[in-house]
Each structure stands twice: as structure tokens, then as C-alpha cells.
Image (cartoon, rainbow, N blue to C red):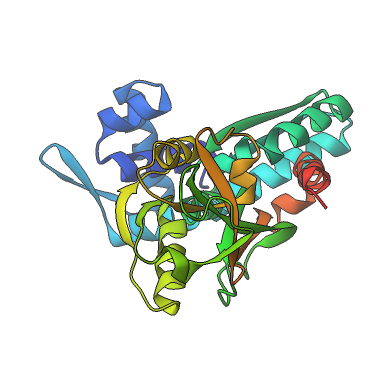
Length: 296
């Protein structure tokens, strides 16, 4: 019989490439990792790893087991949490991953309300941009992912539970002394000859697509995932940018002015979880509080 603790060890070995590195990641000893891997191979009835010098390589069976491990572990977590709630423990754990502007705006309000309503529920937070945050959810490394996307993207999230939160519009950001600083509305084309400061990779791709639709390719001189850094660079007169309105809520744009950009570019912000996890009371409560925290 396969055990969850053995699957977690296998995933760590696959991710790190060695027993010693996996032991450091899991906070245990190298012999303990070796012992648990032997037990897992005995249960599976076939080798899962090939030892080549100092590195470990997965066999075909090992690759198959790692591929299924995320879903198995997520299902076990869902079962454990639901059983605990039924038993009346009134406790829960939620692992939340969010992109930075969501972490500074939606998440604090939601988690404060969650703690007030359910003080026994523990929530941990790490930051990651989509698509990495969505991968973490599918791999069983988090329970709720705060994510965003631009436009329709087909079946990207069809296997997940999607809780829509808000539509976030992009705004232009120019230095205070810029020729367009006092304008009510500008077009992307008005900024065609400017030096650009771009944000996260997904936002960067969207910027290039919007500019190319307007007939030019933006000259991106600076790129950073840190929104305050983008605002600081614009405020210093080093270029222009477009940022989500949500990113502007928690940062004072010193030395910079926001302008409305036409045509309107919007991103959809959602909370995502797996179907099994959506039935866990602590996860459902987190989704509810994120929904309430989103501006209407």
C-alpha cells in the first residue's frame, strides 16, 4: 500500500535529484529518506529510481508515480480536513499562494475577517505569479491560488474550481512632468516613442501584445516584478508604464501620475482551488472571504 509520507519523499527526491538534498528540503536525515524510498519501492513492486553517480533519475514507473502524487496528496488533504470538521474539531489549515498586488490588497482584508470568524483556522501565505501559482495548486503545494489572466484563454482552468473576484483595469503611469501627465485619457499609441518599464512576465507579454495591436513595439528599458520599483522608476523620469489598478492601491506613486488608457485593457482576478479541496470547510471559508474582500 502506498503511503502519503513516502510520496512526499519521492517528490522531494525527484525535485532535488538526490537523497541528501531531499533530506534538507524535508528537514530530516539522509538515511531516513533512503529508508522511506526503499519502503516505497517495495510497496510499488518495481524500482522507482536509477542511481547514476551522485544523482538520482526516475524510472518510467517513478515518473508515473510523481505525476499522480500531487492529485493523490491533495485528495488525502481534502479527506483529512473534511473528517476533522465532521468530528467537530473546528480547526483547519489553508495554504494560500498569491501574486504580489493581491497579497497587499485583497489578502490582508480576507485573512483578517477569516481569523475573526474562525480563529482556529491557520493560513500560510507564499507569493508566486501565474502560471506558477496555478502549477503549485495542481501539484498539491497549496490549497488556494489567487491568480489572474488577460482575456479569454480557452480551457486553461477547466479542471479547477474558479471563484471570480473582480475585473482589474490597467492604468497608465507617467512622470509628473510628462507632456501627458495632465491628460484625462491617453491611447497606447500616444506612448509609442516612450521608454517603457514592464512588470511581471505575464503582464509584460500583455503589454507587448497591446502595443503591437496599436502598431508599434514598445522599447522596454527596465523590467521588474516589483510594482513599487516600477512606480519608483517612472517617478524618477526613466520611462512610462501600465499597471493594474489593484497594484496602485497600496503604493503612493511619488513623482508619478496615473492616466486612463484607451482602449481599455482588463485582467480577470480569481481564486482557484481543486474540486476536492473546495469541499473542505476551511478552504471554502477562505474563498468566501476573498470574495467579500474584492471591491464591487
